[in-house]
Length: 255
Image 1 (tube, one colour):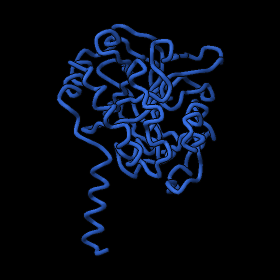
Image 2 (cartoon, helix red, strand yellow):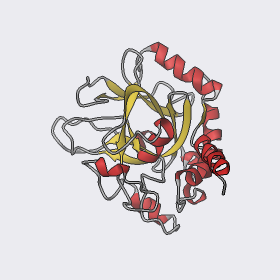
Image 3 (cartoon, one colour):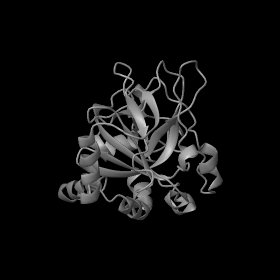
Protein backbone atom coordinates (compact mmCIF):
# COMPACT_ATOMS: atom_id res chain seq x y z
CA UNK A 1 0.00 0.00 0.00
CA UNK A 2 1.35 3.47 -0.87
CA UNK A 3 2.19 6.04 1.79
CA UNK A 4 -0.67 8.22 0.54
CA UNK A 5 -3.10 5.32 0.94
CA UNK A 6 -1.79 4.56 4.41
CA UNK A 7 -2.22 8.19 5.44
CA UNK A 8 -5.75 8.18 4.06
CA UNK A 9 -6.59 5.01 5.93
CA UNK A 10 -5.12 6.45 9.12
CA UNK A 11 -7.24 9.59 8.79
CA UNK A 12 -10.35 7.50 8.15
CA UNK A 13 -9.77 5.34 11.20
CA UNK A 14 -9.02 8.39 13.33
CA UNK A 15 -12.19 10.10 12.18
CA UNK A 16 -14.24 7.07 13.13
CA UNK A 17 -13.15 7.28 16.75
CA UNK A 18 -15.63 10.04 17.58
CA UNK A 19 -18.48 12.07 16.14
CA UNK A 20 -19.78 15.61 16.43
CA UNK A 21 -22.04 16.32 19.38
CA UNK A 22 -25.68 16.53 18.14
CA UNK A 23 -27.47 19.80 18.81
CA UNK A 24 -29.84 18.35 21.41
CA UNK A 25 -26.92 16.97 23.44
CA UNK A 26 -25.00 20.23 23.01
CA UNK A 27 -27.99 22.13 24.37
CA UNK A 28 -28.33 19.66 27.24
CA UNK A 29 -24.65 20.11 28.12
CA UNK A 30 -24.92 23.89 28.05
CA UNK A 31 -28.19 23.90 30.00
CA UNK A 32 -27.02 21.84 32.94
CA UNK A 33 -23.62 23.54 32.94
CA UNK A 34 -25.35 26.90 33.07
CA UNK A 35 -27.52 25.73 35.95
CA UNK A 36 -24.34 25.20 37.92
CA UNK A 37 -25.16 22.16 39.99
CA UNK A 38 -27.59 19.31 40.47
CA UNK A 39 -30.95 19.92 42.15
CA UNK A 40 -32.02 16.29 42.57
CA UNK A 41 -28.98 14.45 43.87
CA UNK A 42 -29.17 10.66 43.99
CA UNK A 43 -25.88 10.54 45.89
CA UNK A 44 -23.33 13.24 46.65
CA UNK A 45 -19.99 13.85 48.38
CA UNK A 46 -17.72 12.39 45.68
CA UNK A 47 -14.36 13.62 44.42
CA UNK A 48 -13.31 14.13 40.81
CA UNK A 49 -9.66 14.07 41.93
CA UNK A 50 -7.92 13.23 45.18
CA UNK A 51 -6.76 16.83 45.49
CA UNK A 52 -10.18 18.41 44.83
CA UNK A 53 -13.40 18.90 46.76
CA UNK A 54 -16.05 16.27 47.49
CA UNK A 55 -18.70 18.31 45.68
CA UNK A 56 -19.61 15.89 42.89
CA UNK A 57 -22.94 14.10 42.59
CA UNK A 58 -24.85 11.50 40.66
CA UNK A 59 -27.64 13.68 39.35
CA UNK A 60 -31.27 12.72 38.83
CA UNK A 61 -32.57 16.06 37.54
CA UNK A 62 -33.56 14.43 34.24
CA UNK A 63 -34.35 10.95 35.50
CA UNK A 64 -38.05 11.42 34.81
CA UNK A 65 -38.11 13.34 31.54
CA UNK A 66 -35.09 11.85 29.74
CA UNK A 67 -34.50 8.72 31.83
CA UNK A 68 -30.84 9.57 32.34
CA UNK A 69 -28.40 9.90 35.22
CA UNK A 70 -25.22 11.96 34.93
CA UNK A 71 -22.33 13.20 37.06
CA UNK A 72 -22.11 16.88 37.98
CA UNK A 73 -20.11 19.00 40.39
CA UNK A 74 -20.73 22.60 41.42
CA UNK A 75 -20.10 25.89 39.58
CA UNK A 76 -20.81 24.29 36.22
CA UNK A 77 -18.29 21.49 36.59
CA UNK A 78 -18.83 17.94 35.39
CA UNK A 79 -16.04 15.38 35.97
CA UNK A 80 -12.55 14.62 34.75
CA UNK A 81 -11.40 11.44 32.99
CA UNK A 82 -9.02 9.14 34.81
CA UNK A 83 -7.82 6.08 32.92
CA UNK A 84 -9.00 2.55 33.67
CA UNK A 85 -7.03 -0.45 32.40
CA UNK A 86 -8.91 -3.22 34.21
CA UNK A 87 -10.08 -6.46 32.64
CA UNK A 88 -8.40 -8.64 30.03
CA UNK A 89 -4.67 -7.98 29.80
CA UNK A 90 -2.16 -8.39 27.00
CA UNK A 91 -4.43 -8.64 23.95
CA UNK A 92 -3.30 -7.72 20.45
CA UNK A 93 -4.91 -4.28 20.99
CA UNK A 94 -2.65 -3.53 23.95
CA UNK A 95 -0.04 -0.99 22.80
CA UNK A 96 1.67 -0.74 26.18
CA UNK A 97 0.18 2.53 27.37
CA UNK A 98 -1.60 0.81 30.23
CA UNK A 99 1.77 -0.27 31.61
CA UNK A 100 2.01 3.02 33.51
CA UNK A 101 -1.05 2.20 35.60
CA UNK A 102 -0.36 1.37 39.22
CA UNK A 103 -3.81 0.08 40.12
CA UNK A 104 -4.85 -2.23 37.28
CA UNK A 105 -7.23 -5.03 38.25
CA UNK A 106 -7.47 -8.25 36.24
CA UNK A 107 -11.27 -8.28 36.28
CA UNK A 108 -14.08 -5.75 35.79
CA UNK A 109 -17.35 -5.62 37.72
CA UNK A 110 -19.47 -7.36 35.07
CA UNK A 111 -17.08 -9.99 33.73
CA UNK A 112 -19.62 -12.76 34.37
CA UNK A 113 -22.24 -10.90 32.32
CA UNK A 114 -19.83 -10.45 29.42
CA UNK A 115 -18.89 -14.11 29.55
CA UNK A 116 -22.56 -15.08 29.60
CA UNK A 117 -23.12 -13.54 26.16
CA UNK A 118 -21.36 -16.55 24.66
CA UNK A 119 -19.05 -14.61 22.35
CA UNK A 120 -15.95 -16.30 23.72
CA UNK A 121 -14.94 -13.12 25.53
CA UNK A 122 -14.36 -13.62 29.26
CA UNK A 123 -14.16 -9.97 30.27
CA UNK A 124 -13.94 -6.44 28.93
CA UNK A 125 -10.66 -5.29 27.41
CA UNK A 126 -9.89 -1.63 28.21
CA UNK A 127 -7.92 -1.39 24.97
CA UNK A 128 -10.94 -2.47 22.89
CA UNK A 129 -14.14 -1.80 24.78
CA UNK A 130 -15.00 1.85 25.50
CA UNK A 131 -16.42 1.51 28.99
CA UNK A 132 -17.22 3.97 31.75
CA UNK A 133 -16.50 3.44 35.44
CA UNK A 134 -19.82 4.44 36.99
CA UNK A 135 -21.07 3.79 40.52
CA UNK A 136 -19.11 3.42 43.74
CA UNK A 137 -18.92 0.28 45.88
CA UNK A 138 -17.15 -0.48 49.12
CA UNK A 139 -17.47 -0.91 52.86
CA UNK A 140 -14.67 1.32 54.10
CA UNK A 141 -15.79 3.65 56.89
CA UNK A 142 -16.89 7.02 55.53
CA UNK A 143 -16.66 5.86 51.92
CA UNK A 144 -19.49 7.20 49.76
CA UNK A 145 -21.30 4.62 47.64
CA UNK A 146 -23.81 4.68 44.80
CA UNK A 147 -25.45 1.79 42.97
CA UNK A 148 -26.83 2.86 39.57
CA UNK A 149 -28.88 -0.34 39.38
CA UNK A 150 -31.10 0.94 42.17
CA UNK A 151 -32.20 3.67 39.78
CA UNK A 152 -32.71 1.59 36.64
CA UNK A 153 -29.25 1.58 35.04
CA UNK A 154 -28.37 -1.94 33.89
CA UNK A 155 -24.88 -3.47 33.67
CA UNK A 156 -23.21 -3.12 30.26
CA UNK A 157 -25.87 -0.65 29.09
CA UNK A 158 -24.88 1.96 26.55
CA UNK A 159 -23.63 5.29 27.89
CA UNK A 160 -22.84 8.56 26.15
CA UNK A 161 -19.74 10.58 26.92
CA UNK A 162 -19.29 14.19 25.84
CA UNK A 163 -15.60 15.03 25.86
CA UNK A 164 -14.59 18.34 24.36
CA UNK A 165 -16.36 18.67 21.05
CA UNK A 166 -16.84 14.92 20.62
CA UNK A 167 -19.52 12.41 21.45
CA UNK A 168 -18.51 8.82 22.26
CA UNK A 169 -20.68 5.78 22.88
CA UNK A 170 -19.51 3.30 25.48
CA UNK A 171 -20.95 0.89 28.02
CA UNK A 172 -21.22 0.89 31.79
CA UNK A 173 -18.45 -1.60 32.39
CA UNK A 174 -16.92 -1.10 35.84
CA UNK A 175 -17.38 0.48 39.25
CA UNK A 176 -15.16 2.52 41.56
CA UNK A 177 -14.00 0.42 44.50
CA UNK A 178 -12.84 1.51 47.94
CA UNK A 179 -9.19 0.64 47.32
CA UNK A 180 -8.33 4.34 47.18
CA UNK A 181 -8.39 6.97 49.89
CA UNK A 182 -11.46 8.78 48.55
CA UNK A 183 -14.71 8.08 46.72
CA UNK A 184 -13.96 9.30 43.22
CA UNK A 185 -15.91 9.68 39.98
CA UNK A 186 -14.83 10.34 36.41
CA UNK A 187 -13.02 7.37 34.87
CA UNK A 188 -13.12 5.49 31.57
CA UNK A 189 -11.25 2.77 29.73
CA UNK A 190 -8.11 3.75 27.87
CA UNK A 191 -9.78 3.09 24.52
CA UNK A 192 -12.57 5.56 25.29
CA UNK A 193 -10.09 8.12 26.62
CA UNK A 194 -7.99 7.74 23.47
CA UNK A 195 -11.06 8.38 21.31
CA UNK A 196 -11.62 11.57 23.28
CA UNK A 197 -8.11 12.94 23.70
CA UNK A 198 -5.66 10.92 21.62
CA UNK A 199 -2.71 8.72 22.42
CA UNK A 200 -1.26 11.04 25.04
CA UNK A 201 -3.61 9.18 27.37
CA UNK A 202 -1.97 6.35 29.31
CA UNK A 203 -2.39 4.40 32.52
CA UNK A 204 -1.03 7.27 34.56
CA UNK A 205 -2.14 10.27 32.50
CA UNK A 206 -5.78 11.16 31.96
CA UNK A 207 -7.75 14.34 31.32
CA UNK A 208 -7.71 16.62 34.35
CA UNK A 209 -10.36 19.20 33.43
CA UNK A 210 -13.79 18.73 35.01
CA UNK A 211 -15.60 19.16 31.68
CA UNK A 212 -16.51 15.58 30.75
CA UNK A 213 -20.20 14.70 30.80
CA UNK A 214 -21.04 11.05 31.47
CA UNK A 215 -24.65 10.11 30.70
CA UNK A 216 -26.22 6.77 31.64
CA UNK A 217 -29.61 5.60 30.35
CA UNK A 218 -32.18 3.65 32.32
CA UNK A 219 -34.05 0.57 31.11
CA UNK A 220 -33.49 -2.65 29.25
CA UNK A 221 -33.63 -0.91 25.88
CA UNK A 222 -30.21 0.55 26.69
CA UNK A 223 -28.59 -2.90 26.92
CA UNK A 224 -27.10 -4.18 23.64
CA UNK A 225 -26.57 -7.70 25.02
CA UNK A 226 -25.56 -10.24 22.41
CA UNK A 227 -26.08 -7.71 19.62
CA UNK A 228 -22.86 -5.93 20.52
CA UNK A 229 -19.61 -7.14 19.00
CA UNK A 230 -17.94 -8.17 22.27
CA UNK A 231 -15.37 -10.23 20.36
CA UNK A 232 -14.18 -7.20 18.38
CA UNK A 233 -10.42 -6.90 17.97
CA UNK A 234 -10.32 -3.10 18.13
CA UNK A 235 -12.19 -0.08 19.45
CA UNK A 236 -13.71 0.95 16.14
CA UNK A 237 -15.35 -2.40 15.51
CA UNK A 238 -16.90 -2.53 18.97
CA UNK A 239 -18.07 1.07 19.11
CA UNK A 240 -19.68 0.81 15.70
CA UNK A 241 -21.70 -2.18 16.96
CA UNK A 242 -23.43 -0.03 19.61
CA UNK A 243 -23.75 3.14 17.51
CA UNK A 244 -27.33 2.59 16.35
CA UNK A 245 -28.51 1.98 19.91
CA UNK A 246 -26.63 5.05 21.11
CA UNK A 247 -28.16 7.19 18.37
CA UNK A 248 -31.60 6.06 19.46
CA UNK A 249 -30.99 6.60 23.16
CA UNK A 250 -29.78 10.18 22.82
CA UNK A 251 -33.12 11.07 21.23
CA UNK A 252 -34.50 10.93 24.78
CA UNK A 253 -32.60 14.14 25.49
CA UNK A 254 -34.79 17.08 24.54
CA UNK A 255 -33.04 20.00 26.20
